[in-house]
Image (cartoon, rainbow, N blue to C red; front, side, top):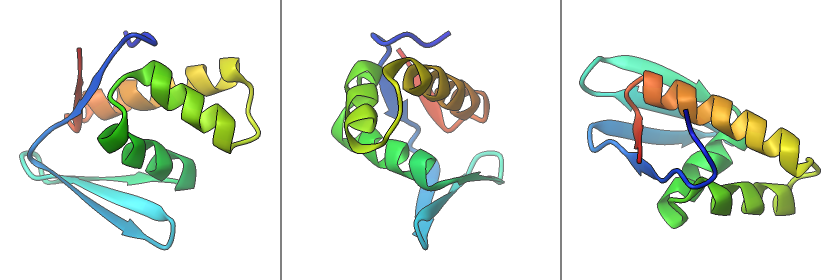
Length: 91
């Protein structure tokens, strides 16, 4: 279960392509595609700049009209799914 102290590492065998503000991720190991909406795409981009979920949550609440609580809940749900799909690892 992710926490604000969790750190994200994108797996090496994942390809990312942005298309018109949304992203498509491809897990080269499984061959499975995963789509992200514009906010999910922004979060994925932030993985390259900030590895701590607390930092990513702060950026998202600064950039979007969302409460910190809602942001954290949605962020935890997203990273849980990304980890389940084998696209990231949390530590």
